[in-house]
Image (cartoon, rainbow, N blue to C red; front, side, top):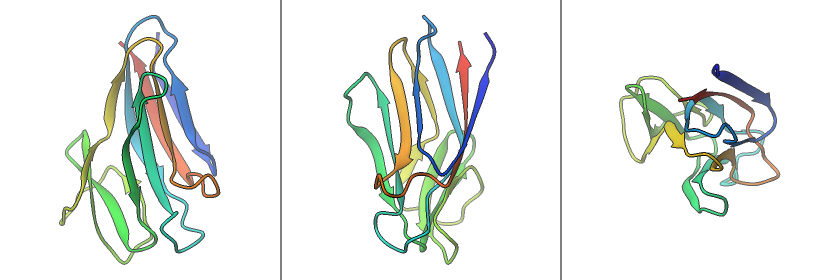
Length: 130
């Protein structure tokens, strides 16, 4: 099987592994919705078996950002730019999270806005059957 690039605008991302094997998920870019300056502008991620809890929830408004460290970890830091979650370099650190996950057959991942009223502005996520 080949890798699949998932891209979306103004919507949340959801993927369930139904390949019969393991799948690697790489979050290359996920921009939170900044149309409102509020704590509901943020990103949350759930990964694992159906019904598993969120592994990350962060709000950003317009004063925080997530930056990449190397290939597989991002961290949150202050900024005067719009809030976003990207793979890039960083100079400050607050909270860290992984940007690469592995899913067993039947497991799933959701990357979405903290509030259902504010879905992700944009995402680019890669799924790679192993």
